[in-house]
Length: 336
Image 1: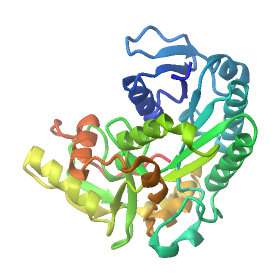
Image 2: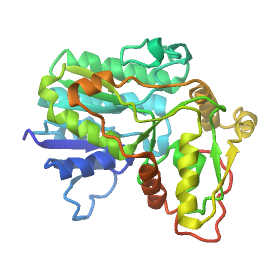
Image 3: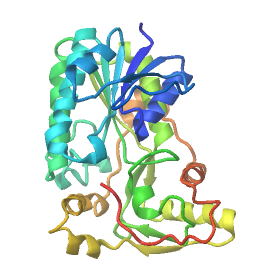
Image 4: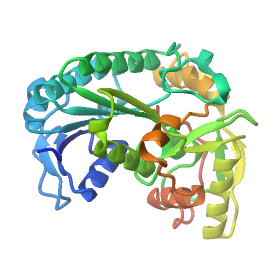
């Protein structure tokens, strides 16, 4: 069963991409899904009825698995403070029972503003974690619990990356902030401060990196963390420029680049919890966040890296933006 994996969150962005790439790499993939037992999909995945909040469901689904991909989030991303850690605890219990490796797609939420600028200009895996947001504190606690689990019978692999984008990436800044799915792209809203760099990660590249690391997991420490360099937008113009080029090539008209309406977030945040959290995370758009992938390169030799224009084209095609007419890309606010 060394090539059997349980993916929690397989209906989401990174979980779904991991499931697809693991299948392509020859893994037997199981996935847990709430609600009615899924009908056969012909996708090669063994779909099981269950809930990541049920320890019994997770333990049963993980039986005989060598790897558990923990890419699950609360339904609708609600009640993070109450649900995220219990779900992780269930994954840890299953991994310890099976001696399995836990794979966690990491974020930069666990780093506060004091981490930037980092020494030598790059953020290393062991940089101090002093978050100033609720979600950041939860991320720190998640990693702390995983480190404790690695001291017992579980192994842990964490891959931190920048903001996700991709054709099936789910809720993210690209698809909920910069452009809107299934609409013609007349304008691009950019949340970052002018001249400030920002870290992006193409979802298929992230999944490919994690699959490659799983292939060599026996050589890694019991608690292994890696950073991806991804696509570094050095001044806030690389991503918007790529979107403009791809849209112009497809439609003949380049979209306008506009500032994201943060003022709406500021005005509405006292009344809307989601907007308050978005406002808390604004520092990630005001401070450069280049991540150091030296450790990753030392293990794999290279990082999976799709050229930016190619990645943006696949993303916009997957979102239904390049073959629509009559729908204007209206300003809006991203889901958090």
